[in-house]
Length: 91
Image (tube, rainbow, N blue to C red; front, side):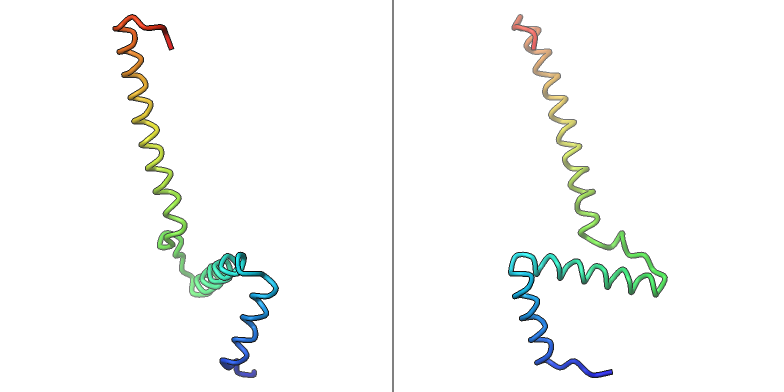
């Protein structure tokens, strides 16, 4: 099996940059890295999905937004009660 040296690696990266463009190259790099990590974990018999910050971040964001939504709903109810006390129009 031939060894890949620095010159060959640079040529491959330049070709990838030309073919994919500067906007898609980081996305493809992340996908390839994630795929390699999953493949390595599957071979080793490990599951590191909980350790992946990209997978836990959306869950944390969803939880934060859910809490914010609940606070806003409570505030809306409080304002509706205040409006009723003041005799304002129903909302």
